Amino acid sequence: MKQKNGRIGNLPANINIMNPVPNKDAKTITSLIRKNGKVTGYELSDGRVLSKREGVTLAKQGGIRGVAIASRNGSEYLRSLPDGSESNNLGDLPTSPESLG
Image 1: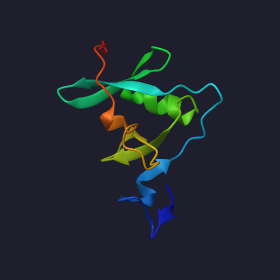
Image 2 (image 1 turned 90 degrees about the vertical axis):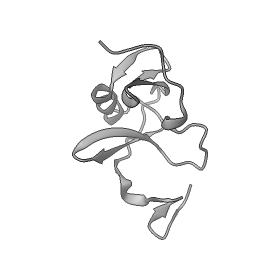
Image 3 (image 1 turned 30 degrees about the horizontal axis):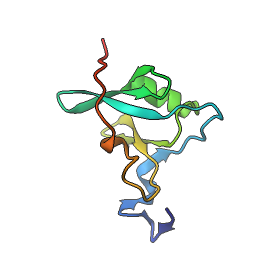
């Protein structure tokens, strides 16, 4: 999706603090781990389950495809790269039955 007037779609273009370049063997997020409705982790396409912090770290290293790093209230988190499709947005992914700890 193209940037126009400082926006990407309906979002400000500068919402992401980092857009990591994925490695050739980068995984995708297939489902979310939630606790009390809040995202606490991610399940990857290779079956690994990561905490939110581990996911951000791996994404910064290029290990997760299709995500950017954003920050809210000083806490970093992953968000989908805007591409015009809502079907692959993180918030639209299923919740995994896996749990952390």
